[in-house]
Length: 75
Picture 1 (cartoon, rainbow, N blue to C red):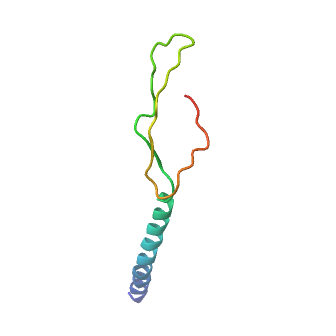
Picture 2 (cartoon, rainbow, N blue to C red; picture 1 turned 30 degrees about the vertical axis):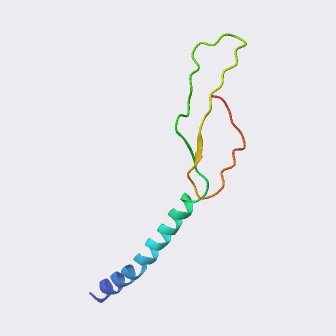
């Protein structure tokens, strides 16, 4: 019975430390820049050859650090 109490006492003492470490790791994983794009695709439909078409994609940084866009590619 004493071993069970001792083991439970150790477990209950370490549980808050585990919870704190998990919370810190989760918050650090979510930190940084985060790009939010409402409409990720756009279909221009039928376009005549040589025509210029324009569409603006709105990108919002919802993170807590500067967002740097290094490259863009078409799908």
